[in-house]
Amino acid sequence: MLASTEKRFRPSCQRETNHVVVLVDKSFGKQPTPEQKRREFIKDFITGWAAGPFLANMDRFERHVICEHCGKKVIDE
Image (tube, one colour):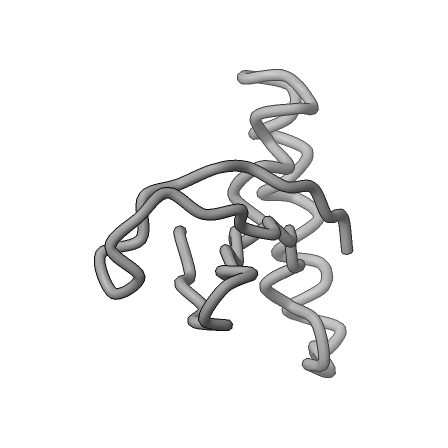
């Protein structure tokens, strides 16, 4: 997991507050089968070759944005 902070307007808080941004791997906590691992490897290899390693890995993560004031979490995909 990677974490950072940013300022966002939060409608429920009615003001701009600090938010913690956490990048979470979509496959966290799942046990893939060998067939799924092979399929993911081939897909990642082709995507990495065509779009570059940065863009290939960005679709593997979800952005979880958590308000420091009210604690509300929003998932940006």
